Amino acid sequence: MRRFAAGLMALAVAGSLAACAPPAAPKAGPDKDYLVFYADGRAGAALSAVERAGGHLVSTDAKLGYVVAKGGGDAFVEALGADQAVVGVTPDREIGFAPGLTPRAQGTTTALASGAQSTGAQSTGAREPRAFPDASALTTRTGEPLAPRQWDMRMIGADRANKKVPGSKKVLVGVIDTGIDGKHPDIAPNFNRALSRNFVTDKPNDENGDTLDGPCEVPSCKDPVDQDDEGHGTHVASTIGSPLNHIGIAGVAPGVQLVNIRAGQDSGFFFLKPSLDALTYAADIGVDVVNMSYYVDPWLFNCAHNKADSKKQQLQQRAIITGMQRALDYARKKGVTLISALGNGSSDLDRPKVDTSSPGYPRGSEKTRKVDNSCVNVPAESKGVISIAAVGPSGRKASYSDYGLEQADLAAPGGDVTEGKGASTTRSILAAAPEAVLRRTGLLDKSGKPKTAAVVRDCSSSPCSYYQYLDGTSMAAPHATGVAAILISRFGKPGKGGAALSPATVEKLLYKTADHKACPSPRTYTYESDKQTCEGGKSKNGFYGHGIVDAWKAATITR
Image (cartoon, rainbow, N blue to C red):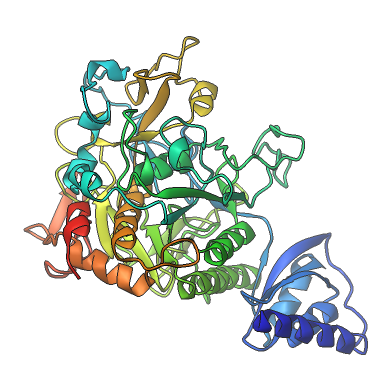
């Protein structure tokens, strides 16, 4: 509170000084809102810079050190960038992208959106083996009907761990994503509606007039907190904490509470400011661990000083790097463990060379530019974040998963439809899907029966519930988040949200309980025609980090 008040006072003083400043520069372009990040202790100077550039203050965030200012176009941005008090400037607009249940842009086994960390398993283009569209064919007398399909949970021992340590209701898990279907029968018992928040407003069309989110579902264009019109966030939440209720599947930590902290649009795009707001909110309400299965766009790699980029583009990337790092630091200092998907580019993040997909917004803005290891994927390569690579059913690093000795902290099941002979949907990760999304995307017939083996219906109770196979590092990260929730349930002390365990301790225990896995021999592994080289030893390497997460060890280890 004292820090916040001081920030406002500094801005107020700056406002008074600005009255004596030289006349505002002429505007060059229509007014837009910009996030202006200032250097430590330079709030007043930054506001003065805004005034001199012809802009004016809209709002402030002293916690993360930025102001929202309205100004006129490129000239405004470049004038701010020339001031030493300003460290980054970015439009307050769509700058990220998460995947949909329907194909959108790039991908591995199917289409992937630019900021996505998952792939859809429903459109591989290859022949799929016989699969049952209804759970009745696999229902067991006890346990969850779809448990036989959950190879991922058996791999990390979650099927045993959730009987011993299902997780505590005192543990709050935040899902920063496209939303959570809080009414899904296999999520509702663990969904905390009261604490959930939606930090985005649907936008029917983008700035070029093209369809973005489509028509708003509610008059305010702000979806309810228990709604997910995209599906990605619901799948992630289900993997973390679907309950033990004899319906569908069980998550890694089926006893914890799930909090929707939405930062993604219906279309999958992410705004920078909602991402910042989501992290700040998670910290302030006492969330224990957050899952971030996305990266902040429009830049796949954010480069602070890339000569291939314009001054405006450099300022935007600096703003993303700085703003997200401040938000992540704020959350971590308040006890939030930060877990992120590593990425699906099949790339060695230690040695990135070319980026052909940035800037990914607006569409069609992409260019080819050289990059190096000074350029970072955010938040996966941000400080204080635990980043997760993906493995397939055999435990081999998934073909699409990014890797790197510096960047890969842990690995977890993410699925890989192409692993082994032919392609099989059942090598992906099965988790909850919103029925409304499946119907809208044509994956169900009029009676509700799945039209593809990638969608499974469980009617062992009423109403029926739906699930979908997906693969990607988006699916790997929530396995690690669930294991973190088990550790916090066991070792956490009373805290603001109910339980508390320092992020440093959680990280240490995650590494301690992981199953070390050595690089393949030879170290260069060929995925069809793509050669990927693993560096490091068994205890830490570029393919698996400190190892594959282990829920059973987390449930049984002694400190």
